[in-house]
Image (cartoon, rainbow over all chains, first blue to last red; front, side, top):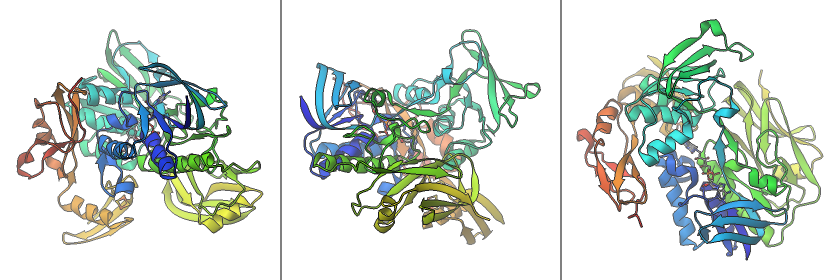
Length: 418
Length: 120
Ligand SMILES: Cc1cc2nc3c(=O)[nH]c(=O)nc-3n(C[C@H](O)[C@H](O)[C@H](O)COP(=O)(O)OP(=O)(O)OC[C@H]3O[C@@H](n4cnc5c(N)ncnc54)[C@H](O)[C@@H]3O)c2cc1C
Ligand code: SF4
């Protein structure tokens, strides 16, 4: 079967991409979603805090997702649920397995919007018994919010990422005692508002520069041993202490879900784990686009929706005949900027404004974020503080964007102000 | 009196400083007026939105997520949550449907935040 546009993933990224493409004239669209419902990870994020940027009101995850689902339904965009894509080829064939068996599609363009998954326990090294009671924070979130099942009564959380913080409050609400959140780094990768609302409000201690060194217990976790770490992140064992608990939640990071991208021979960024894309969100494989958490992990769903709407519009432009330029400007980074999206710029000036999303590698105060072209500052923005947990955005005017597209060398970075 | 706080009204998380006396606070560090309003409210009468979930029978989900239709006093969070204990809804549930009316005399209701349809 032929399809103009196949979108893989029906989370906020896939939904916004579909709307973006439809509104630019694409009609032959198919969204493929592995789960039996649209909405992605938002279905289990029942807390509020979504959508303030887009809707100027604070929605819960399911409510935010539903707004986009309604928009997709109103446009009559086709979707298939309980359908898992198993292969994508560089010439844009898509193979999926669903209720009707194997599905084989030839797509004009593909948007990868598969989101991310949690770093599993194997990815971090903790000694000790392989007993029950150790969950990733996201799995615990699904159990509590979707199944009504409580994973434990006395909880320790490793990692202060947003899911861990949200779950500290959620478990507290359900009557559990959260004894500590233990963070390896001297800062949190979670949003400040979650530290305030999920920990401080309930006097849950957040131990920076600490880690879990051992899990104890026979059939079920009975305690964990935690210890502070030195400057090289090595545990200081003579200061170790044991905390009794029946549940350990791991919130140690998210990884973009890029198995399909690899199969399609898309070039991945070693920094983000997502694809390298140009300013039209196109990957190194022509006609294959990527957006949302599969591209880089976002903390705000509003930015996922914005980015994905843009990806959908760009896919529409591609289907209408617009092609990437053969020569592209590569965007470098300097200072404490760890990565930017996009990393490549098309040469052709389309009169549109460029915007860069970025993350920094440490906490910096009094900084200037800069976009440089051939040694000259094209745009700068002063910030009181930047942290690894919060994505920063720099948006250029169409004139500034044209300057970048014509430049030999472009870089985005950070300078600490005197 | 001087207090440092982080605005929780939106994920920007602006760092603010509140100085002065009740009725005459000055707020700095906020990006938008919501931040100022929050800072003053936090000094006088802190409020929180509360989200949780309750059981559903006969639906395509086992639970339905709920929220307070607007923020309630911070000191009432746990008492409010207790009102949800033992609540079992029967599918279908509509988004926005009242689950518990008038939480502890606040005039605020718990409402459903997702639709649950009858299981096929
Ligand atoms: C616990 C948690 C708390 C958060 N809190 C906030 C918050 O308070 N405020 C905020 O603004 N943002 C928050 N976020 C961020 C926001 O939810 C995410 O950024 C957003 O959901 C990402 O959207 P996505 O579509 O890229 O990914 P997802 O929502 O993960 O959607 C990806 C979809 O792709 C599907 N899929 C994957 N692989 C395949 C395949 N092979 N075939 C078919 N389908 C596939 C998946 O089933 C899924 O439905 C939170 C995220 C999490 C995890
Ligand atoms: S002051 Fe405004 S922008 Fe800053 S966190 Fe509060 S609501 Fe958000």
